[in-house]
Image (cartoon, rainbow, N blue to C red; front, side, top):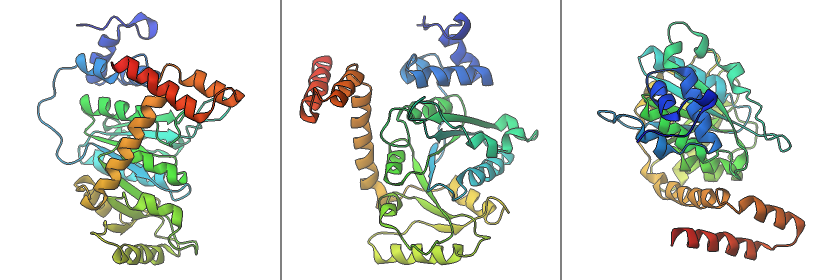
Length: 316
């Protein structure tokens, strides 16, 4: 059944979905905006698509995460360029922090991307910035639906670059098949406690800016840290998105990166918590409950009961 929902300029979203699957960048942007804004669900979008024959080997969605300042954007750009030159369609969903007042995003990642302007590969590269908005984690869970839509229309490698804000980065596990943690040169702080939760989820670790002093030392510290724990350590590589050092090896490693069994339980834990968060934030009474909590007319326990009760009625 064709969707009757109207998109921009009165165009049926089913037509936009078909146009997006045929490669229209404008239609891709419109459909992703509709998914992000909640006017189109992933299931509705997929209903308008013809089934894709065959599946992507390995992973389809990879989260690239790490603290601010480690060079994630430049590194991601270098990886995308390498894969695009090899013939892979690679999309990036760059999650930017939202303004607490306006809700808008800084959208700074596009400034650092050069692959989108390379005439030889620009048709194989797609970049979109997304605001974190109302979610408690740095990766809004709606990004999962946006990423799955991109995969469905032929972008066989979708990267999610996260904000890089400490423990909240754990939410990236909820939306990705693989997780790559990017570290920078050691600053004399060793393995910080707040990194532990994120590192346990890592399928691979890239110590970027290896042209700077302290990078090799930090890589050694990471290897020693994993050596003291249980389970197999993830691969740890030195890279420089700026000079290109290690990029070819990293691109090869990540392209066929297997999932770490060591991190499987931690990954499932985060996915469970993320889906619980999603149910809360998508609840029709969520904003009203938040206002009542702020006014002091409702306590946390009653707020949870309100949301849980409504969910029970809707599912019953």
